[in-house]
Image (cartoon, rainbow, N blue to C red; front, side):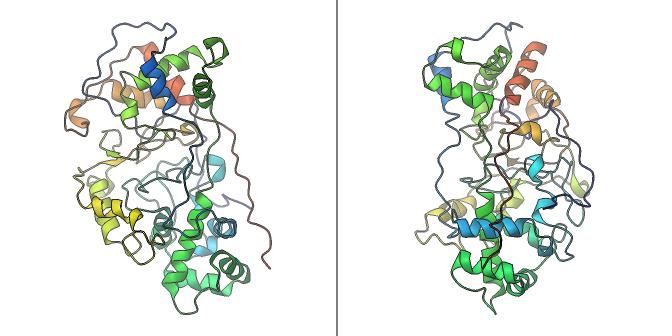
Length: 408
């Protein structure tokens, strides 16, 4: 398969890279007392916080709202759809146009380009299984619903349910794979039902995209086994940066758990691009969109008959989201996805650390409303934090192209 033919030139991933959204600084985070770079000794409490970021990959159940989740035939169908430019109205754009496998399923552009340039940076598709909200503003409450959005968006694939359904019906291989994935031929009359199942097959494929073990994971697992420091094989600068990350940086308040994200929404003051001269409303607009969508978990296409998966969608109406709040991204494999921020306006990790080091407290608040405090790290501490964040990446890509061959 040719993944990138005819697309705009993309910048190469940068080793000196930036977090997509950096640490949520705590109101009580205190400035560094000195510039010491001594090898850290981890307390029992710090070790427990380190262990909370694993094991990796974390065990996550399949999506109950998607009957195709975890099914091999659906994964193979979704793989073929993901790279098929015929899904777009002009036959020139596919999901892989912006989500490039070799670039950690992103594109290294400031803002994604489909039919035209969009207003936000292309997020990675890695490690999406088990998330609660999708997109920078959380405008989708399931991965299959999120998979439908760019197909319909006039700036991206600019297609319609009718266009997609007709493609699946009229193509022998797609029709065969649809039947194997969903147990029947695509409906000859219900365009929307076929369209939704295309989204569910695309989601089944994307759920398989998981990043590999990193230097941090090997260090974390050595701690879990109780191995002595001599067996850690993890650089001292990375350890010092980790101590900042789980300590006075307060980064784990947002970048929590094995995937280094709690999935919450914050306004960080990091991104600066304002589309059409107006602030991007972020989560506020996302809540309105998810509640008004026919494809949300409250609608007719949710396969979870227990109703449990729709609970968070009902609760979204009660959120007190502020303008400019965006979802906290994973920090895994971040060195492959530069530039950073929801608008792609930040080139390097050092720039992000400097932003939070001298942060204006008015630009970032904790969820309790109290203003954050700048980190005020020494130059050495800033470097250590960068080294730690780089240790959350691996250059190995376990995914290999495989659409299952010919369908008979």
